[in-house]
Length: 88
Image 1 (cartoon, one colour):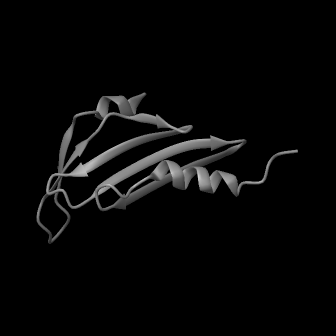
Image 2 (cartoon, rainbow, N blue to C red):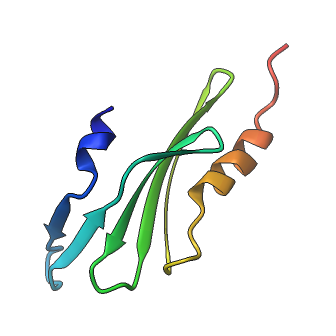
């Protein structure tokens, strides 16, 4: 996948009027049926995860940023999938 080419890549983002932010991308994983890519801020303040999963004919696409050790976008995706009605 294209996400695999992001593994180990470091990017620097400079929002207007703010200091530069450096992020390191991890290796994409498949966690409980959710395809997840994680990025960690170089200052250690945040971890962002972007996850994708399908449930029937629904695509679930969630991005979550949290303090290190507290992000679990896979659990959020699975909880969302549990609320999607089953097709008959």
